[in-house]
Amino acid sequence: MSTKGVYSALSGALAQSLKLDTIANNLANVNTPAFKRDQQLFNEYLTANEKPPEVIQVPRVPGSIESFYDMQGGDKSFVDTKGTFTDFSQGSLRPTGNTLDVAIDGKGFFEVATPTGVKLTRAGNFTLDGNGQLVTKDGFPVLKNGEMGEDPSTRTIQFDSSGPITISDNGDISQGTEVIARLSLVDVKNPDSLQKTGNLLYGFKPNMAPEITNLVSPSLKQGFVEGSNVNIVQEMTDMIQTNRVFESTQKAISTYDSMSDKLVNVVGKTN
Image (cartoon, rainbow, N blue to C red):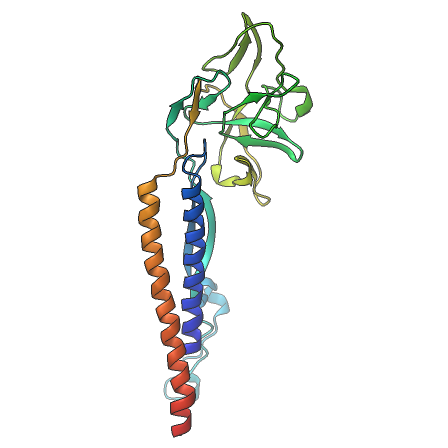
């Protein structure tokens, strides 16, 4: 039993270590525009409870050797990592005064062209490259509205030097008095289908079909950026609690190790 117990405790320690890594990453990005905090979810895995009733064959004959039936794995339990999930709640809007900074107030994602395909982002701290093309801070072209499946290379946004740039609340981009494009903003039906791909970009999980639609009524704020939705107080509280649980699992592992040692070196020699 002590051997089984030590593995249960070890799985708990590994889970808390993973949670600490996630919290540390959240804290490191507290000032990153449009960063969305991550969180770990765990389940307690009980083997017998995970099996359908029809496959558990348990003899129950009173007063016979059959009464000492196989546990069918029901005595095994450990912490099962459910996965990493992203909190897509709104971050606060911070004024910058920069003409090319655009914050999404509410639902929606910008579409961005990358070497690995079209990705989504909430980070609207845009800039112009050397050719007058609207790009992200990492140089990926920001896309204008278009048909689903249309070649992204035909949807880039190009400026010249003819006048000031304005971006309306609905995403219309004007240079001088002429509307030249509308930012592509999409809504994702199931945000849990998204996964981070780096550079504040999102793709879709391999096992989940993308369900996206053009955002009907976007709300944009020119001259603002969306801040991170990380709450420092909450993350620090979670870190303290996680550290305490981690220390408890370490003590449990040490206790099980001591029990095993006594079982082998004390009880074994006595018999």
